[in-house]
Image (cartoon, rainbow, N blue to C red; front, side, top):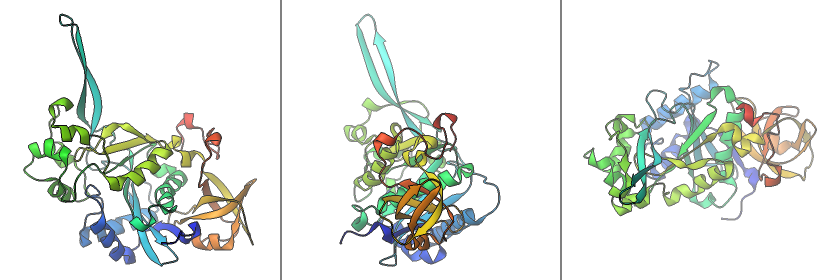
Length: 364
């Protein structure tokens, strides 16, 4: 496909009429993306819960789940999804394996061994969780994935009181086209008479705690696992490389936790330290006939009807100058309050939050 214009993409809440597109995406998703189970009834219920989260005026409970779609306006088609769970493990504990190292020393033999171990934990319970990332392969090498992933961070920044101050995301681990996972076969399958795809279907987008609670709570000594399972620990499925790289660029850490099913890396961070969050600015929109500034991620500041897009803009004083077409994509008018962050963040400008929020205060 020809290189698309950044201005042809809009991130918005998923709507009931998007169900056929969501079904198509769920069927195409990699094993391990079980927050979009290929079941029409479950997907419809997921959309309804998301709409309620966007629309409700109630105080946040932590149970909210938000589902976004990325639309290519030039095609009039949904080309991707991404989501946010306000609080991981809201109903059940959110389990992961934590990488640790045990040191065993023998003075008589003058030997010391540092051994990799895995500890079942629920450290990430209560973290805000990024979920459901999928982009059509034809768009993988465009700027669209940046909007699909980072647009969620502008939403979290704008409605910080509805989310935790720490954030995590699971990424799919190694498995083949038939769903054989080396890590699951070496660990999970030992305690459950089912293969990896069966376990994922049983989870069906719910908490994995009902399986994790039957896994051994004593440390797993990694050298005792088969070599292919050892190699799979912390390794990505190829389909996970793109969203994973975006999260690493944001400042997520990938060294501490892995998924209890497939051993894929679970990344985590403080929200206040993420690059998009720290560089997010709140500005009043000023419509101009033409603008030749840098490209920005720009989002509305209303939860219901939230929109995010790319726009060329000039940020001067307290205003964001952009053209009428960009405002139309956002469903906003001249003078509206918008949230924006640079599409490309210069490492030389990594000092602090452009909106006056101190990372040391833990504020988001």
